[in-house]
Length: 263
Length: 263
Image 1 (tube, each protein chain N blue to C red):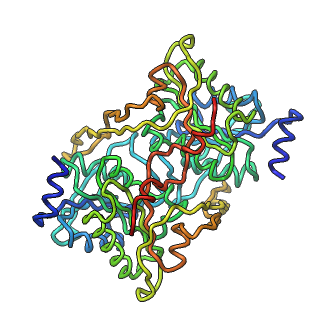
Image 2: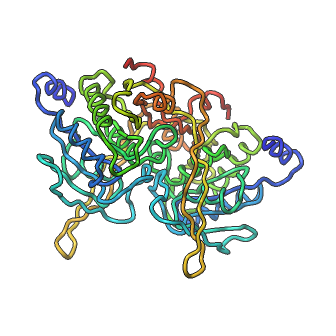
Image 3: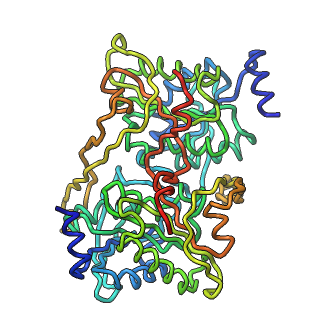
């Protein structure tokens, strides 16, 4: 029934409902860029955190209640800010705002990379994962420029390209995708490249400080360590002027090990 | 070099260093049960959250500093409580307490299931994932009894069984494992069973309330929806009186979809 409706929408030009969220918060320039793109494809509803939630991973809010407040930030777009995490936003949007599943969910555009091992820590991607668990076709977008004043021209172009491919089923709608966009001049962009998640890790290096009471505290910092040699990875693609598209699974079973173990 | 040392420790009886953490907080009975078991296998160091962190997923603390305080809670065990998430605890333990990687990391015993889709939301499992990213052999343990007064006898027995298997390389040490323990009388326990992650989801149902100022707020609740028919899943095993052991991967690439897509 749902599929028929979606097919009909594509044929007749009926507008799909598109849920937009992020982890940098509803006032971040990246989400404004994504909304601008998504409006060309359907009716956009925004439910996003009221404050930055970077590094929140797949956190949900259990021990305290959540608030939702309508805001007037984007022209012709229903928008709500939420006190919870990106995953909370998706759950609340489906249950309390849309009262049904949207046709698509797009998350981002994140200020900073979620390629490689960053996908594990990313609130942006976890929102997309949550949508996919709900069988909503979903993409998370991230741009490799952390700055607040970043130029989102190329990021908008890539988001438009990927959303077009998903809506027109050039990539399977049952899928969940992690799209990262390189920080390069727009003229040097080579295209969207199918990739796997690169092997890498962060080497922690906590900065130790002492407060005025003489007690120690620590700031998390780290250095990215690349551990992959493949040319089929997201990291390789981004370094070679491609945007990367990684199909993502939330079945975490390590099947290679599953086959190797005898208990 | 590290591997040789580990081999030597196994041969000579030198005690391995075991890092213990959890997501229910350092005062939870589950972590005390795990420490009791782990002490039989090596030198135990505890770094755990100072407050419950359930549902924190793979969250890390970026926007604020972290505190670490030594506590005297467990006999013959160095223990520290941390203001951060379970993942922060692992990162801080390696960088600021042990100043090297421990030989093993065990997380839990969680009060409540982390089988099936719960693995995605679990702080307990994310701590184990973080250790595995650091190449530390790791297991997360969860017991299907939420109660504070739960009887951990069977959970301790299963934890001991799984830790023994890992230390004696009956399961690959390069692996990362999600072990769940059923809530059954100890006499009915059938053994540790190799499983894959069951397909399932939570159907959200937010409870809506109104505060004394007339504003709405929401509590997250949900209903578990089982979507799998296999007998090789963790959910099936737990329902049939087995403890489940799922090898876990943090390469989230959906390789089936990767092979199916042409961009």
